Length: 443
Image (cartoon, rainbow, N blue to C red):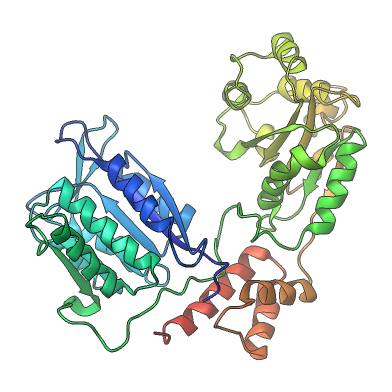
């Protein structure tokens, strides 16, 4: 296993206001403490989401791409898991619904732990698709549930397999003097209840080609844009703003994120990075609200915004993803003109980095119609973001597979190069699927 690629654990917790209180905070703290002593430093990465609604589950899984999913919640005696609705009250989810979701995650998720009362029904259904699923065959108290989680994750941290970790979880309940050690049950695929250890214990082998979509936020996984980054920071330090221009799905969002993470060390003088995804902004009013909220100032625009930004120290670097949104109905030249004014000059309160799939002069032709220059003309110098060439694709694959037990054949690499057209997202997806085919035969 490549110890540089952590096993990701997604902790999902729900504690509806109209149900008895659970000690979710204590459970999470104890799990973190158990993983902190892992034999391989950095082997496990724990991500958490609390007050979970049913609609939050898939997005959290897409964002984190975990190998282990831990649900901590209430359960009904009909086998439903209880999440929260918009009012923070119980919203029950049936076993068939969760099982259908996990059927779509068979290549990614290795283990599901349902730390909730009466969750055995859910565990059986999910185990049709996921290798290891743990549920509770009866109501279980807080102390027993927390003890099981502690024993389970301590064993994982000691490099034990899932089956052994399950048994250590049960033993931990007994060590605490709690008579509930028979309530946790472990299922594997085909609804086969585990009752004795197998000769071989399956190990969790994380797929190195993640995330398959969305922004790459892990600096160690960001790849292939070093030259562009250097040019961008040279342009910013010269007093100009930057426009990243390139086709969709080419990696502009990940590049923006990398710029935001390096702004305070590579900009002279340093600037605080503010990242806004314009696809999530509804209109001009919403833009000003989002901008002021991210900066941490009272909502304002016009002269009041200019005055507030001039007081900011350090000064700001504003990164706008999907700048095309500003050409839609609901946005006017006023907001674009103000951004131009705030970014104009060597010591401007704002420096801009915007991302678009079209040249800015073509994107905002309405400015010329009213006798104005494009709002970003002479402010943003365009940096063309190009597709990866064959050498870059090969370097990327070698980088992600370094020290990995799985290595692709030359035929597989050639097929990836030919099929993906140099688009990083397509390359990532195909590499992920290629790696997954190998893992299916690894125990």
